[in-house]
Length: 436
Ligand SMILES: *[C@@H]1O[C@H](CO)[C@@H](O)[C@H](O)[C@H]1NC(C)=O
Ligand SMILES: *[C@@H]1O[C@H](CO)[C@@H](O)[C@H](O)[C@H]1NC(C)=O
Ligand SMILES: *[C@@H]1O[C@H](CO)[C@@H](O)[C@H](O)[C@H]1NC(C)=O
Ligand SMILES: *[C@@H]1O[C@H](CO)[C@@H](O)[C@H](O)[C@H]1NC(C)=O
Ligand SMILES: *[C@@H]1O[C@H](CO)[C@@H](O)[C@H](O)[C@H]1NC(C)=O
Ligand SMILES: *[C@@H]1O[C@H](CO)[C@@H](O)[C@H](O)[C@H]1NC(C)=O
Image (cartoon, rainbow, N blue to C red; front, side, top):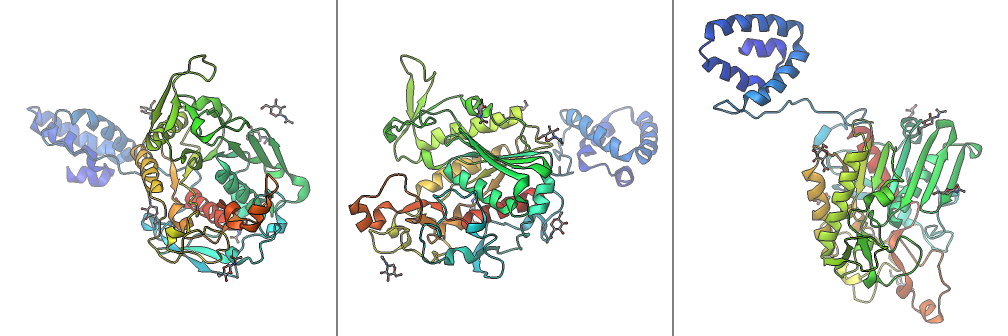
């Protein structure tokens, strides 16, 4: 019987089938059957392997020694063309930043016309650009170089969508900047309409889009009206409100983090925002967040064909609001920071840890039925206190004299200068897309 397995490449899953059969009293008859099977297996090895594999799932119910080994053939994810040098063993997210003035930055700020004025740090007066010359170097292997032509070829006739908050808009913008440099001016467009921004590469019939939905679920902050943070509310089971606008995409990159971090319990609306009497429950940030992530996964499962499409989730983008976090004198933040944090174990705020656990646990739990590629950018970005926009950005409101006198008070330590850290997130996405 070992022979059968060898010649027909039947995976170990059929062992239980075989052992069940041997115990039966029809032994002589079955011997003949096996000879027949041997011949059949020789001729139709592959198909038989699948057949027996399926059958053995039932026969295992009767087996005295269940051998619950599944078919080992690993499904290749869509878009994947090859493995990285070291195959699966390389953790791309564990590494260090190395200075590289030869290959960084991947583009010039002034050469990408699509960067929002909130992210054009040099244009807004940042006096140095040290933050642009760092390359992420995983410990165990090299990141493949980002190849814009290759990415555009993969997107030919396809649609890629980023969904989430302003950090994800930054990652979207970075992707557009990385791609647009190889497209002549007349063959591309960039159009914003409400929540949706669409970059089109006409010769490729490809789009890269961003949809703003900071909670993924419907919320009372989705319109432009300013609400108090304490009034923030998301509606349970409302993923379709935004999700209806995400259909038919070939690659979706989700994120959601910042808006959950109010430090307060989160209000969940059980009915509709139109209800006269609103039924609201308050839950912990972690529970509210897991409601949203689970809704997203169910939406993906229901709506996308993951044998053809890919889904990514970008982990939380770290902020640098408190200089004590990295052991500096209190009262500072990312303002005037031009060097990164050297401590390899630096993590920052604890609340990030519990949210990280929520995402990674849920995604891990569903890795088999809803495979989502996790872009674990939190740790590697946490070192980069030097890379935020700080005061070098377009301000929504004019600054007061008090603010001008105290730049720390209005420094933006959430968003990132471009080019910069977020290009690395897309290099990691590129690596996972093609070499997962
Ligand atoms: C993310 O990457 C960091 C750095 O390698 C690692 O310490 C952490 O465990 C990872 N987290 C998850 C949830 O994969
Ligand atoms: C980039 O990808 C294109 C298309 O796959 C290929 O022809 C080209 O050689 C690649 N460039 C580099 C530098 O690898
Ligand atoms: C362009 O791509 C879309 C899918 O995004 C497809 O439906 C359409 O047929 C394509 N058009 C051409 C001219 O290839
Ligand atoms: C903007 O989107 C809406 C629907 O979301 C559509 O009705 C409208 O025509 C779009 N406007 C432009 C200028 O494309
Ligand atoms: C995905 O869909 C399958 C089949 O409909 C179902 O069994 C599974 O529970 C779903 N998983 C999630 C996370 O929605
Ligand atoms: C910025 O930091 C440097 C030290 O790195 C310090 O000498 C300088 O005074 C700081 N500038 C401002 C405006 O805080």
